[in-house]
Image 1 (cartoon, rainbow, N blue to C red):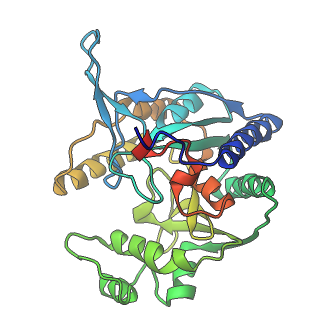
Image 2 (cartoon, rainbow, N blue to C red):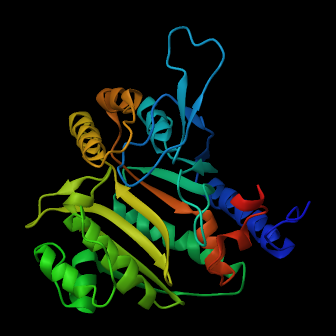
Length: 323
């Protein structure tokens, strides 16, 4: 049999181990508790642009559904712990997304997610930058920091207003990038501009922090009533690679349920399979989630940046093709 050997070098695997050790030392020094939460759940991710794996359990369920969902992030379970009163916490572990395999994607990958009680997204952004810079130091690299709003990024680099300009202007800004427009929403065009026009121009040695996203892209973040409203969310990039996505977390149970329902409606309109919403998370929010900020950092993406590679296989012991 061929293809039995690892896809990553031993140097890359040692770097991963060094980063894992750094993470645990980093958070131990700051009093942030490491936890482990379930990989299999009764609920999936309702986000229309994320596909969840499902499995069938063959044992006794006492009337509970046999279908369980592999987590796409530990977010919901971590928030249940926060609502129960655990305080600042983090998890470093595997997550799973269906349909994502290729040069920069693997169906299973490693995510670092953590939450800080009483912080907002900008305070958490500072800590995320500190951790990434500590990771860069593992390979003797440094990076300068640039901070901008989502609106200013598009204004400055594409000369358009992402919060107000119509779809026609957004489409034209893609230039010669050929995209089938059928079924695409305004947010889809903004995403395409980010991935095709903006990210490729980001400087290799710059950490770019983009905060205050369109309210329509809030996901699980709070919406601030500016004019127009914005989501209290940030993303952090190192060069062209998106590393982290953070929120000033939504704590309103009714609003969270409404967002889950809207997700389901979008999924139905696109012909996507229905995914059960996480009633346990909604119940936790009803009980009371403390004001907090949370962030998810893609470990494999960060390792790719540290090793200057655009192939995720280079940082995995065995990628999807060799698993």
